[in-house]
View 1: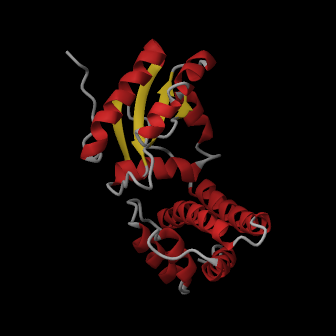
View 2: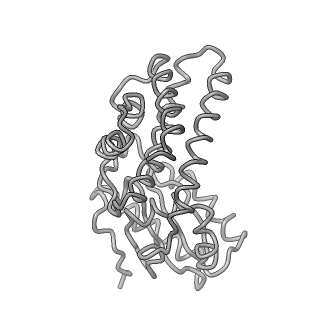
Length: 240
């Protein structure tokens, strides 16, 4: 009898490939397999196979490089199925890294699907000081990265589109972290999160809105507006 996997909440068209993915991981890791957890768009009900890949965390008892090497060979097949390479963690790594990557763990905790095994992300003891520190660091890193990306684009404004989409995704993680600091434990939809932060800092963020909305234009003018918004977030974050 085939093993049952929890894929409730995942897009119907993704359930069969995700089931095969789970089976592949279990086969490769054997007794070391602890759990598989989906997060991001695939777990939040916003997954679009044309623009997203399913993200996941595979928790193992021990990290085995030979196993990872064998899993890497599955990359082309998984890519065609719109499944990204998993984050590989151990239970000890999760416990020791909560203060280092609190925003990333918060993102997983807020929207995730436990496919099999223990739910390591249901009740994470995240600390407010760690979340605030990473919010500040991430926003400053994004701003610095935008400067470098502009130089690397070498005048090719079309290259900025990819930069803005990536910035939008990273900023959304930080905005939800800021809202969590203000008592919002459940994640808001992207534009709702932007609106809530706009109210908190009492400033509109049109560039951020454009960056998190893949339907809009992402050119030079939008890049300048987004940069101004990131700069405003950097200066307002401590006052809010």
